[in-house]
Amino acid sequence: MSALVNYDDVEVGTALPAQSFPVTRATLVRYAGASGDFNPIHWNTAVGLPNVIGHGMFTMAEAIRVVTDWLGDPGAVVEYGVRFTKPVVVPDDGVGALIEVSAKVAVKLDDRRVRVDLLATSAGEKVLGMSRAVVQLA
Amino acid sequence: MPLDPSFIGRTYPPTAFYEVGREKIREFAEAVGDANPVYLDADAAKALGHSDVIAPPTFAFVLSYRAAAQVVEDPELGLDFSRVVHGDQRFVYSRPVRAGDRLAVTCVIESIKSLAGNDVLSVRGELHEESGEHVVTAHMMLVARAAEGE
Image 1 (cartoon, rainbow over the protein chains, first blue to last red):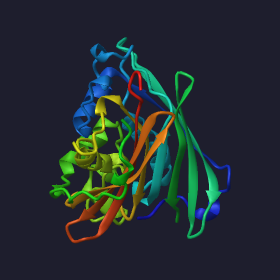
Image 2: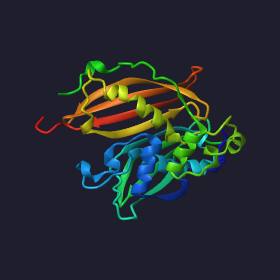
Image 3: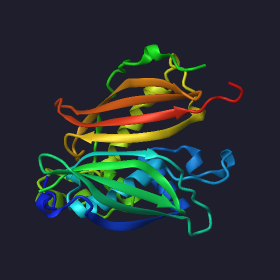
Image 4: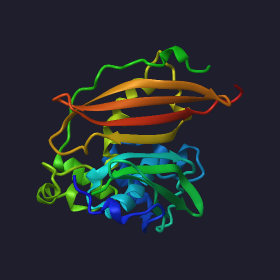
């Protein structure tokens, strides 16, 4: 496990490169199959919700890519947690939704580790809260 | 009816071993749109010091979610899954999940709370390799919204 980022090169407040992740109904069907989460709220509007909402775990998977792409080695993620605050609404209009993720170094910890805080929004709503990763740097 | 707090601490039997395959990791990485070669190419993974391709960080949920069925479908606990939403999720890693791992999940009910009429259930899933090595712990918090009229 060898992150490409050196602990000595980062400061509290260092921003990671932000990314945006598109999500359509097809994305959700594919994720349902790969993850085994076939809850119909993620693909069927006939179950009572006004629209299909994305899997929280899909959003969680996308958000950490901002961190793993920065690290180089995803094996350097030591801890990762989120709170699901609002759903990502995914209309069946061929465009879908966009998950926008930014992140910054929040705390420099012992043992050349840092805590990264993430911000994930979709349609202007914060979709993840308390979104934090602890990572091992070089 | 609120969940019975005497279930706090209940430990469920370990699941059967799940064998993590390279192609399952590839399928998952493609489903989240992540082309990092460490998930797809054993040589790229070895270049970073891993013995085989590793899985994306949230892949562990595939196993922990399946295992948590023991808890959410436990008739004695009596959780109404139709009212459940996923509140939060956290992973603590000893090392990444990798191809070739044979992993069993042990679920423990960490806490049961009642907040504003909602049941809040926290379940910990410990993933161990067949050798006994700890790989990752998955913490899942579920909220069962109060039923109408309760």
